[in-house]
Length: 338
Image (tube, rainbow, N blue to C red; front, side, top):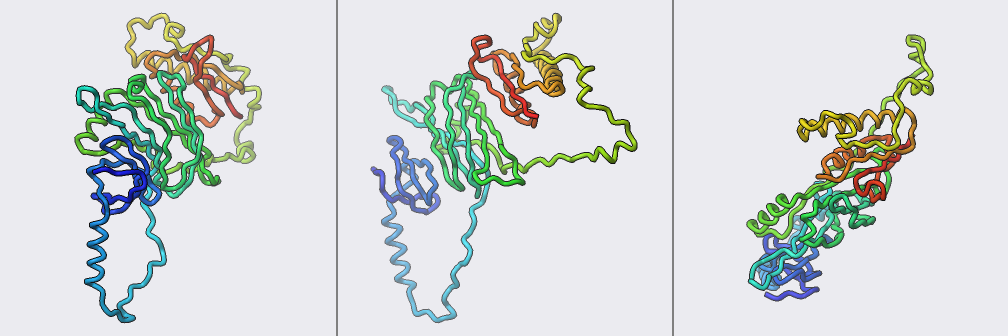
């Protein structure tokens, strides 16, 4: 059955009407139902003429004289839609090759806000740690936002999807930002595509967060009440007895120990993270404004572990992993706030 942009269609599984807003390919279209856009296969929709005819006929058959007591009261409150968080959705665009086989050409990336809150967001996509695409915008309650298309052939290059959300209308009880990320592995991606094909579904999704986090309230200690019981030292002089900090920290294992050849990957990672924690704490103690951490490129495991730690440290103002002529993409620069 042929559909065109602007056609009003019936979603068969939900019995609701929607408008065709885009033709994706020979098998799929994009529809809009009540302001929410989503893809469907053409065999899952139909024209609503038969449904309307049957409804009209039913109304005529049931039409009868009504008394005052028979009139239903109008609903004063609209039913609220159920919230289940923020989702990142991937829509595979499938085409037929010269041999008649279905092949995935690209993935359409959508952000779905299934909450009653509007958010600003900062989106970044990187391959092998190299920034590829960035977008800043706003997404409103129970709306979806089309971000961009990603060629399917690029998805074998360790894609890393990273988001930073903030409230459009700030709330003192809520966190200033909420970060979320997704790293897709090729095998994981292929399994997802095969899964939706077997279920005759059009897309697959990952939840970025369930609820926007509350602001963390730190307990304050009354120093005055402690001074009578404990001896108070001048904290400004405490760092005189600490090891010196490093503005550039090289975490290559051969820089940290001579006896590393017999170590396994997990043991090496543990040594690297322990060293990072030590010099991170020293940088804070010495009120260091910034620090460069050399983690190398490799598989990205050490970089990802460090980035995950930095996301939850209140002393970190921002951090960036971008090209540097000295280190390439193998280093992250951290900027502190006090």
